[in-house]
Length: 242
Image (cartoon, rainbow, N blue to C red; front, side, top):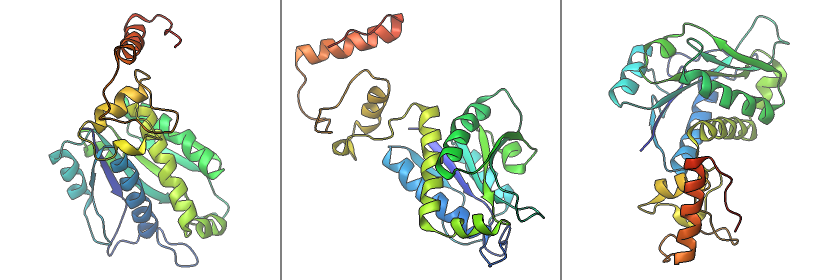
């Protein structure tokens, strides 16, 4: 099972950046992280979080946790700050270009821009500890500027936090080849992850009513249709229209 490491930045005695109205970065990152965890778990993924409450966690402890748990991807959540109160954009950081981390970042970044409507700060490089010391591909997301009063007021709302979590989830889903809107009747099924994979790959499909009916026997015709789609993917030929 794919394991995702979520790292809500700061926490405990470390508030991170603080808005003029008192909003603290640590609270925003935790709220988004918890929402993101729920979405990822709902997609059949295992989630390891560096913190789930307001507590101090050192950078070393965060990296050690993700390395020990052998996660496949790390997403560190932060909110930016600047001396200017007008600065405002979303950006995603990686350690260096050319690897899986860049692919993850380029999947997440456009979703963040689309979800918030904030300017695109692009995919950037930085020697951040969590990017450098984790063994898995890691990205650090800067979710706007808390120093911008208008942005800070939005970051304080559940709607914006949910939108940010959904955007990151969509980016990860695209990178991992996951189905974002899966049939509800596969939740908790022993074959849930396998079903999600074949649905996302277009090898199998659900029913018009939105169900998958995982325990319903397949006919020989349905099996042939699924195998034909698989064969088309393997050979690179156009799929058969059913």
